[in-house]
Image (tube, rainbow, N blue to C red; front, side, top):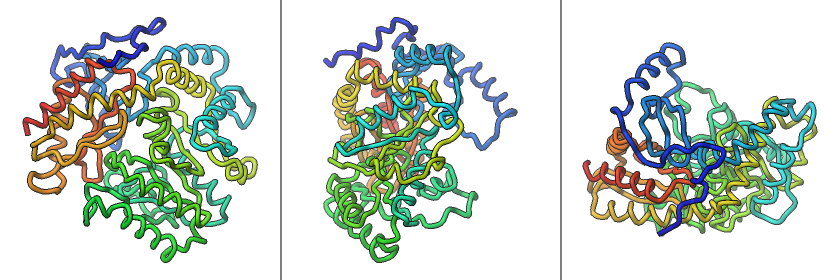
Length: 455
């Protein structure tokens, strides 16, 4: 058996007991009352996956206001990779809050910002000289990566992909593929954003064996013939797509995208907002396929729940922007930087990169065994602790979003927090904290697989 991660023996943070325990229906009466009040206070544009109010969390458990202990297969959408309130994060944040909460790095400087930049420069793929800039959100970081590419190349066009998700700002919303709920009614959109088909093996029309070459041909046609390579500043791609359905492109495809970009002087930007920081069994998902992006964007798992994002790239690209062209009032906040250093400390101390691979080794066989012969399950896919189940109408590959919704609802009733995703809404994604103990992981998987057996 795989040893349980050492972080479960917290010293300065009290960890909830690592067991699923239900005292009420989910959601319980206290959560329902708070949710009703929330509806009268907050915009209805703020959706929610599960109307449960959480008051404590740690390891792989969320404790709600009714005292229920839920298994966390969401990690706040890949944010609490090292667990909520990880000891090193808490310790460093406490120390920093007592010293300085904010000065704005553009006004007066502080060490934490520089330390996070140094770590990102060292950890991202490639031995070339690198520099970093910090921001507050993944969308903000993606947008600034595009700004950098445009300034450095003096070109306007940006190429993105089918099923992509890059954020909710005007530019990143434009770059995002899915219309509802991210884009519908919010136009007009930003100019000079183009979309190529993604190599999606499960849904490629001529079959997975033709996926990489045909998708690369389509990308080359778009860049060279339709846009003009001399007009293309950047190709922006998620090494594994997140909101789009945890789609894992063939290795040959990502390598071909990198080659095309290099041949035409196009900046290759890897959006690792969801895949980065140990989530996939490598520090960055680009490493799985030997890709060395010109710029890598990080966020979600970077600061253990505090808002922080990074853009790390070739030094000559990062220095192409004149002073004052990058930054923001809250960008690289000192408390968030302290949290990030706690995240790096935890990953190193507990070898959470390896732990992500262990989670896949435990979870994937259980998912595949349960899926064998089940007509509703089209594919099990993913890497590390970033796994997904795609649901289809039996006897076809037609998306079955209703089945995914039913499975998710059944999991929620049993106290397992899961997330739906995919362009067609037919994918359940699993993003457990890397510190989740094995028995809790197995319990959550048993609830999930029982749910789809009941379809």
